Image (cartoon, rainbow, N blue to C red; front, side, top):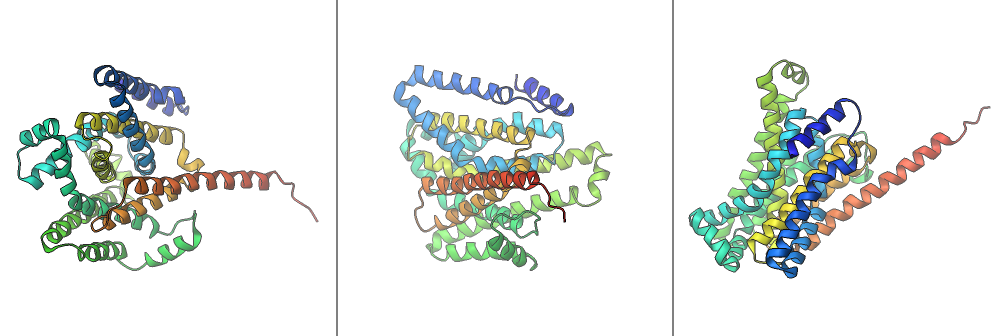
Length: 367
């Protein structure tokens, strides 16, 4: 069903007509209502409420993720866009929010996957504790990966600037070679210095892997989409496939970096792994649909500062993840701080658009 709906959207786009919001949100709404009804019927009103809270938190805290996804998807072929909106949903819901946390706990606790699954289903409190124990590794990997996204965005000279003073300073700093790598590495080393010797090596290793993952994916993306190369790629199916695959991998690593810390935070709401998976899964589904909305309706072009606001939110999240290596940072603070930047960017974009219309509407005075 999803494939058919997505194909219709792509056909409409090829004709220059974006799909209606009803069509974009219909499938996710039907699935969400079905899941919510099932939870309410099987587990009761209390469980239903927890699922709704988790879904709302995931959606609220992932708007910046949707913005970043949209900009990357704009460069991908319709086939890879469709893959992200279908296969990507499965990866986001089951891979990132269920399987990956199980794998992390298995690695950290020295247990097999079946043992960890049994722990998650029958002793969720202990599973949550084990996942919390793995938090420094998750925070180091995700923090460094997201910080690189933030720095590389603002270190480039851009025609549109939102917070001009800050962005001018960042653009000037970015002219120095490899400054994003230097700053990210320095931040990791600084925060790891506060940790005990046993944790420090794990954190540095995870942070290094986060940096390496970003550099490898970004390097391949640069090669495949570099100046003059993109035209050559269009002539070769194999090369086009590679370019799309790199973007697809990058999108899912970004999603994992955004989401894993939220999985840990979800245990503050409930320790029932199935409720967490359902609530966060519904939220992840809507994040994908929000991405479709932005992509098909040109939202990033309409709201000129939205992309900037999202990357500020990413920068804040990266910093707070690294700070959380030593100090406790509430997920509510993390999410609401990022949301504040996104909402402010949208409001400012609307104000600027109205001012531009007024200026164009004013008659020119002739001497």
